[in-house]
Image (cartoon, rainbow, N blue to C red; front, side, top):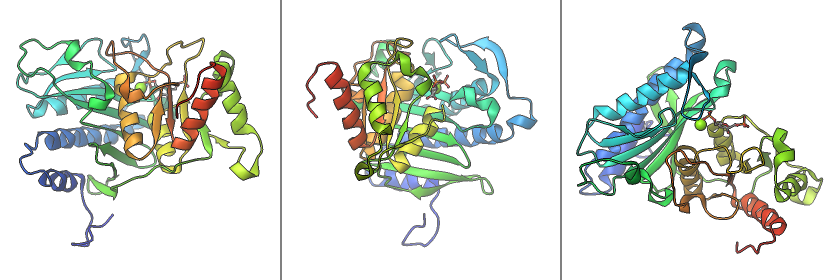
Length: 343
Ligand code: AHM
Ligand code: MG
């Protein structure tokens, strides 16, 4: 995307500074934090792209806090992001999928708390399929308290001051929101800069793609089974049957949903009674982005962003995407749960 006044491309750095200048008195700390994440994203992207030739692919041999095997690139991404966030004395603590408890940074006065999924979709790493990094940023609620604790970090998604993701796909892109719409940048590897590609992405109100792991069909509740059947029925008036697409990397599936419209679902099931995906570093940040683009994200009943968190690694079911599609699945779920829908 080209700056209309100067007729030249806009880099992530320039865009962040321009945004900051719109708020007289802004300290520039959030801008610095976003730039730090941008730097880590470039380093991770470089490593993801050459992973096959540097023996970094594959298992690390340990398991993370969820008992899942840790891939080497997961650890690399975790270290890069945490070290980037330690550079400027802005962030006091990080919570990451790869670490059991909170990670306190050596910045006592740091105002910000950052949640990270350093490398999402890790089962796709070894097979050259898109993966991503997700971030979610909060202000520390009690900046004067001496001891940092998990309680400081347990805030509802509505309190996020910024959130976004990096997608390592056919190109690397970074999308983020600070609550003023969604901006997307594409990495130009020849100059090592993220270049603005869209500064106000809008998700279509309705889409014709549904995205869910149908292998788990038999463990779903009845309302979801019926909704997926509805998606598959032929009805030219409503453009059905819809297309099914499932990458297995939430960042990639949600990014496609943002651009083309439709719905991504990771439901509760008999296998995962509370869903599989994590509220604080997967569902909240992506819900903030999708809502800012005009879409919707619910846990089957209420808004994801309004969930009061009880633990930093908590899971939630998620139904996220175009308003039309999310409202439709909500209706199916409610009908079969014998509830009334207040859409
Ligand atoms: P991860 O953070 O360990 O990579 O797990 C999260 C991923 C999501 O990216 C994706 O949507 C989901 O797990 C896929 O799970 P499944 O294989 O059960 O469909
Ligand atoms: Mg993940």
